Image: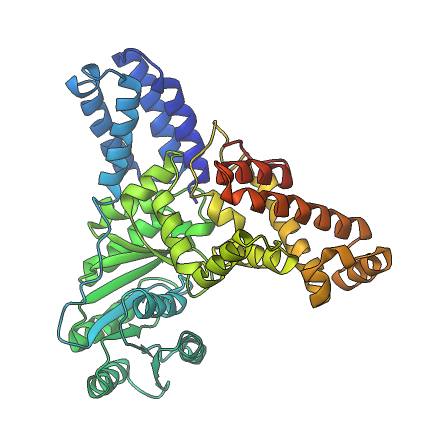
Length: 457
């Protein structure tokens, strides 16, 4: 996400960070680079113009000239303006109403509306502790109704059945009546999408909006359509009183034009971003964190939140106690660590939230990342092909056992040998946990295990 923009802006701002003095001339060169970076990221032209003018106005004023580190002050201005463009802070859903609070999902076909309805239901259930009902008013696509039912069953929320012979307004009203009887907190209404904006579609969704009076009307849009996403959101916003935008497929959007254009063009806040296909892959949109990520400063707060939600605290505590007691870190434990990393979205998801270290950026690390992900999958397959006794005590693994494990995991004997060697390294590092500076030592050691190495900490 934002890889191209992040690389360009990081390089551009690096030239100005060390300057003892900023003049109109060196600011002019930097601003030209910033303008080009934003245009290449498919940010809407009016947004780029306003953004660059706002930076220029602040940079040539006293704010920078009085600073002891003008270059750093300039970077702070760019960060503040990025935040201002995307919205001052995350805007939460306004659900403090007499239940059920109705959330209406709107958008074009293929934007990921139904998937997002499921993700939002999970978010509200798990993070906001709300009881949720989902209902599909898409009477044109039977598959959409079935898809939402499957998602509801997987997530564990209430599904209200609907049928293509019914009218959308009747479906939504019946669902709300049922939700009142069952004391459900939130009803999410999924609506029909179209390939383009047309009068019939708008009339239908306006009638639905008037009937159910939602507290939130969220426009779901594909981030990969760039500034077109912002223009489509504006067209919907002119027809419906939108309360916010959800950007989907953000993980496939290396440019970031939609995220930087939507707020300015529509006047509506981005409330969530979809970061993948899985039902947990929905994050609240924090402009300050995204600005920090764009400038290569990382997004450690989101990383911590992600870890708290996904890591198995019980397993972590058991492992810590086991190591403190002097018991070995076996291959079962090793596999658990790999699986926990996978639940956090894999290595790529973790790396993009870390700051650029020593100028090493995500695009430069792309090949190493891909090789590491492949290696982790291979490791998991090898461990799964072992017997429980072999996992607990790798010393049992003789040459013939290695051949059997390699055959079972579709790997080579040398791959099995390499894994056992890496596990021994990890065991030694785990013993250092209780020593002074143990974590730093372990992280440095892990660098040697990764394909292409990792940046030194």
